[in-house]
Amino acid sequence: MKQPSVYMMASGKHGTLYVGVTSDLPRRCWQHREGTAEGFTKRYGVHRLVWYEMHATMEAAIAREKQLKNWKREWKANVIEQENPDWQDLSASLVAL
Image (cartoon, rainbow, N blue to C red; front, top):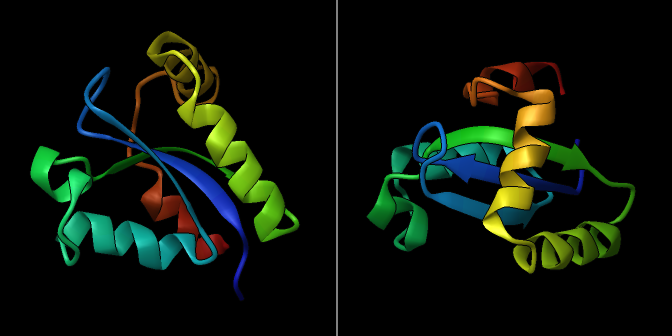
């Protein structure tokens, strides 16, 4: 089942951050981890899913992504640490989605 979501990936704890949006988060995490697409996450080794948020519509997810991309790095880190203080890779938890 497709579910619009916004997510943040990191290269490690307090490492390089990437904010993205997708309709299939497990598949997208696999693509980042395996480096199947050229781009920022492959170039900088950003493979760890550290935060995500589900949305009812793709429009809502895109609006939230744009909001997060305009945030300061510190604000993004605070959001991550509220739910994932150790910046663990959450991709294993996506099996239940």
